[in-house]
Image 1 (tube, helix red, strand yellow):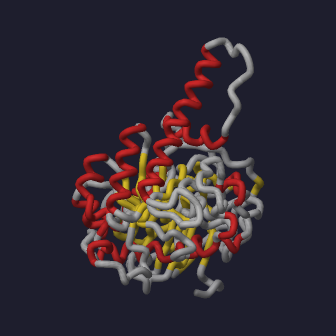
Image 2: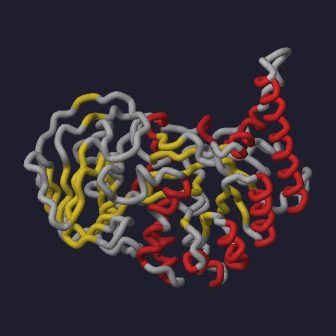
Image 3: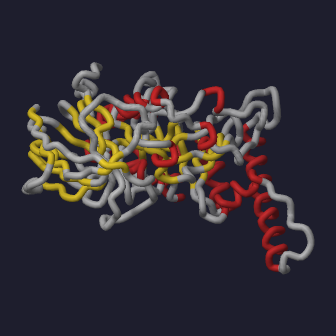
Length: 424
């Protein structure tokens, strides 16, 4: 691999703001090659475009491009194709013989926080809790994901409660935690199924009944506040309840439910609740989704599911979940549930998906554009297209083979990881 570089002038940039579309103000940076740096390091403005040339490029938006070129500047992809000439002032990196894919997404993760902060035992219902409040900038929480090519995650609380709280969509590398947030509202966690017998509810039917009661309570809570507003705010305001406000946002379409669920009967129960209360639902883990695939397809529900790479003791039917969902027209994404399985194995999930019947393109989409679309951030990440974030993974060989090494990772156009000098 040959590298041709130009020296660039680096200047401090202002904090990152939300954006969308190709005509976007410059906001990110390219820095000199280095191993992963501390996320709190100053972020700089990119003075010259960067052109990665000669690699096989998997865009996730269409067929692979042989010996392609991808150009980015100020954190945004500006050009991509087989017959692209790098700009005259570009920093050109020759990647002949290498493979490029989009930065991967993991739509179900728990990284960024101490594991002791993920469940508020013995609380059974805590939708007011926010993973945002415990996320750490400490690089140790994030660097495994970056080194594996996972550049964006939906990370959130655990599954020990019926509702453990609110997730967030965030880049795995960059400046401050605030700078890295892609979407503040990443979904409200609900965990279906039986719970520990030390406190009610315990059975699956009691969990479902509690959820129904809480959604009704949220409707009544909002009705009281609406009546107070419409009545000219006469008298004391109804007391605020942060948990009810979180549920109201779901009922109003401002947030979504991301449901931890395994058994077929619990999948059907949460689908019924979503129809009864008209909220946006994605099911996660989805172990027995293959048993009720027609019901999921009819309901238009997205699935974040198995395999979890190392759980190969699962049945063939479970391991083929991605294939079954694709055949039914259901949008499907893989997840690692990190730290259950490390984020670096997200590519391995795709490889196993192919082993159990998925096409290469479907498997690629299941770790890139599909999890991005499920999280509602596909306008920025999930595929390599002009106008999108320059989140790029460079590999030594076939993207889904575990023997292929991640050699470089760019996040927002900055070199977040370089294997040279870093080691495996």
